[in-house]
Image (cartoon, rainbow, N blue to C red; front, side, top):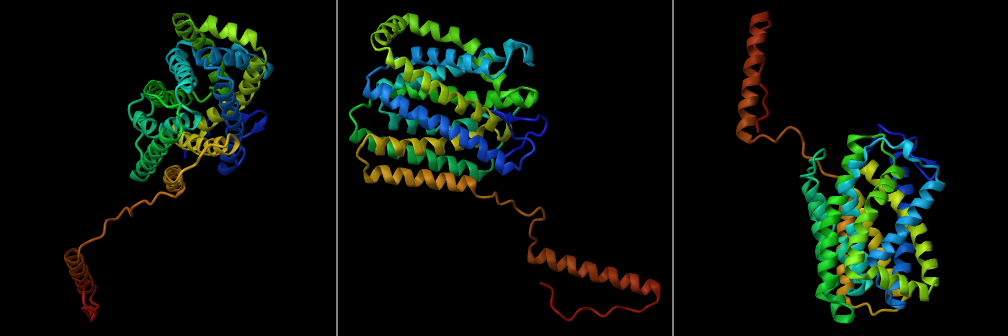
Length: 359
C-alpha cells in the first residue's frame, strides 16, 4: 500500500491525512462497502425482479443525481485544478464500463456478473505497467493472489451457469468489455492523482460525469433505449425512486473508492472491490434464496485464499546473498592473513589461528 502524503484528503468531512494508515483504509473501505452493498441490492431488484434492463439510461440518470449531490457538497468548477481534456479519455472509459456492466444484467444473473467483474484485479495490475506516469511492477505474491481470485471466480461462474437460466454469451461479451475498460479506469485515475496531488475526489467524479454524459447518449439513441426506457419508467414512476436511492448510495461508494485509489493505488483498491463483490454475492444468494452448490463454495474458498494472500506482508529477500562454503572458506583465510600481517607490522607477534574449522 502506498500513502499519498502530498495532499490533505478528507471523506465527507472526515479528515484522513492526520490519521494512521489503517484508519484511513478502514474509513474508505467502510464507505465503499456500504455504498455498493446498497447498490447491489437495488440492481438485483430493478433488473431481475422488475425486469428493467436499461443499463445506459440508468447510468445517465445516475450521473444527474451525482451532479446534484456534488453541488450540495459545495464543489464548483472554480475549484478545478486539471484541464477538461484530462478527463475525456477517463470519462469515455468510465461511462462505457458503467453502461456495459448494467446492460449485462439483462443477460447474466447478478452473481455471475459480480464474479466476472471481480477478475479485474489481474488486468488492472498488468495495465499498470503500461500507463504513463505509473509504470508499476508488482511482486510475485500479488500476481499469485490475483490468479487465485480469477480461478475461484471462473469456478463460481461455471457452477452458476448450471444453476441459473439467465446466462448467455452476449452477457459474457458485454461484461468482458466492461472488464477491459476497468483495467484502464483505475490506473488512469491513479495517474491523475499522482501527477497532480491537488486533485480532489469531487473534481474527479464531477468532471468524469459531465464529460461522460455525451458518451451515453450515442448508444441510447442508436439502440432506441432512450425512448423505450423513458416510456417504461413513465408507466412505472416508482422505478425512479429506486434509481435515485441507488445513486445516492453509489455516490458514497464512488467517493470512497476514489479516496482509496488516491491513497493506496489502483491494485489495492481492486482487491477491496473484489472483497465487496464476494460479500454482495453471498447477500444475493441469502436474500433472494438461490441454490448454493459445492462448486460455488469451492470458488468462494479460492477467492478467500487470494484475498488472504494479498493481505499477508511481503517477504523481502535479504540484501546480502548467502555465500557458498568455498567462498566462506576463502574469505576466512584471507581475513586471518590480514590479521597476521597487521600484528607482525606492529611488533605484537603473530596471532594464533582459530582452532575451529572454517565452514
